Amino acid sequence: MGSAQVIERVWATDIQLVWELWTTAEGIASWFGPKGFEVEVTTCDLRVGGAFVYTMRAADPATAAAMEKRGRPASFTVESKFTEVERPHRVVYDSPYGPETMTTAAEFSEVEGGVKLVLTVDATKPEMLGGAMMGWRSSLERLAEAVAAAG
Amino acid sequence: MPLPPGAARRATVPSSSGFHHHPFQCIYISVDASLQALADPRRRAIVELLRSGEQPVSDLVAKLPIAQSGVSRHLRILRETGLVTVRAAGQKRFYSLRPEPFEELSDWLEEMRAVWEHRLDNFETELERRMAARTEHE
Image (tube, rainbow over all chains, first blue to last red; front, side, top):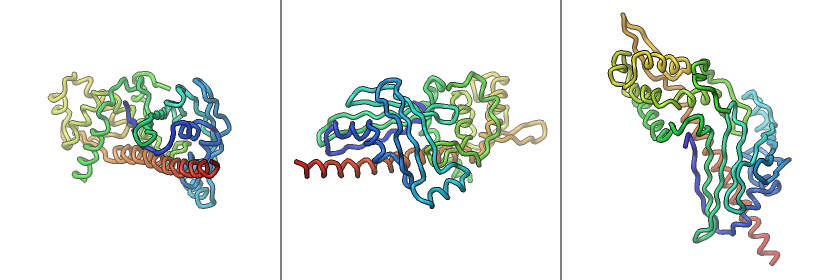
């Protein structure tokens, strides 16, 4: 679907702990920030249509300076919304992404050896693309190769 | 928000210096326009044909199951989005791909993945810390 990125991981733990870390304000704040950022989750209303609001702040002067250099604020708030909640197996939220919406879906299943995560991050609305982006990634890879070969 | 059909036609030529206000560290505004332009299978077919190199419009029309007016319209959209460039030689117009937007798209996909890989490493560290803390309490 679209330009989705899919990442899978398996952790030797129980699904309740994974779910808590992934879906509570305190849990999310403990791991969500990209390198150099701290995250404050102000709202985490875990139900369909519930708000998921967080603020990211540059955690050190070097990161703040790097943001400034790129003309971006050192702190910003993202207002997302939960669209699917099936505890403790699936949670999906939509985030504003420029004029579009980014959809992040996390699916947890109990497998041998622990809990498996399948994370799908999709920055394009399927209805906008009408499923037309199938095979898009491999096509892009070939394009990149062709461009490199030509360059 | 899905854009109305034909919105890509109004897309402006991308600026590689524009960034979105977004957690992902470095997202180009032009990626939106590129994805939108490439969302149409007929435009992707044109892009695929141009992968082998510059081609005159007449060759593209001959190879595609699209009327000449359609090919012209899609080429115009691709050009306005900055995905292709055109060169006139005599009566002929030759189209070719511009590498920059494709590099941007590739970087963007990679970056989106890198941010999440890093987050999941953090997640794993936190998970281990909590499991260790839980064992201590027992």
